[in-house]
Image (cartoon, rainbow, N blue to C red; front, side, top):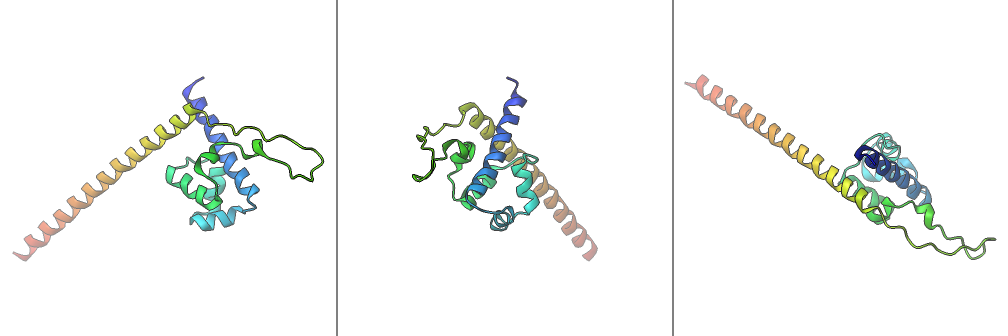
Length: 144
């Protein structure tokens, strides 16, 4: 399987799983968005896999839904147990474990994004420092 296919499959599972967990908890997109201080469109984009999700967003969503982070990797409908008074009685299936390769791919992707962000922030700080230094030199020169 190609690497891009693995990442695409993973994104489909995470976004869809977040939506399913949110619906199972009876939480509206707007409510989740408000609790996470995100726009409703941002939640929709995450659930529809239109945007990449960061580790901190995943943790925040986990808290907002009151679902452990690792469960967001698993389809919640796989473990649905019917109430005792339901017409059909099912056995609880063993909880599926997330694919280790997928989890590693996600972690690697998040680490790369964090490194990119770190580099960007260093460049911004360097630029700002240079601008401030030039401003100080310019101010000192004009005082003389």
